[in-house]
Image (tube, rainbow, N blue to C red):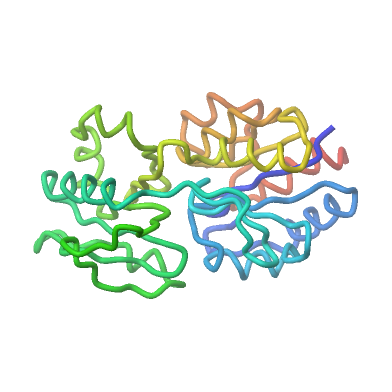
Length: 270
């Protein structure tokens, strides 16, 4: 029996206007009323999903969220950290060297702000168009604090530039970090032990649940790990082909309230 539903936000729970429809809200409310936990799992920070948590009533004691693509597992009401996987100063410097070699703009993010190191002049970062809920500050890469704690780094630039650049990233980097696309124009780089699947594993252990009691719903590459972890993996109708291939069921699209459809089918059974 499903006891926890893990749901991605963009392209999954949210429609193309970044809204949770009334029908989807009603279905999630019914699932919660039946005793099922709802956990939002996003690449965003907690403050970036706060308004959706509030809409769904998920800011009470006992509510949890997976943020930074699994880099953080937090209590939704207080922000208290259950698990955190960070990037160190040395890792940031290594990733910045990679960004310089590949002529890509890089940002990195902690729990409070977005850092902006110098960008290639002709290729500014597009992350400011994506992240609207955190302040941006300049970063002096030569004087980073030794104890800096960063949750993720990102390369955010047009797909036609990013996709071929990703293909050229050396295998040594791929071994040492979790690298996932959350949008066609956004590569997110995390601690190698951070992904949505590992985060759900940590949370379910904390809650005393088995993976067989978890349903996960997503649409992008960064959702693959949680789809694989969950006893029931659901791909959105608009999901990438790789996710559809791994899922047990392909639901309707985010514009067709695919989350609500899947929950009604497998949890509410109506």
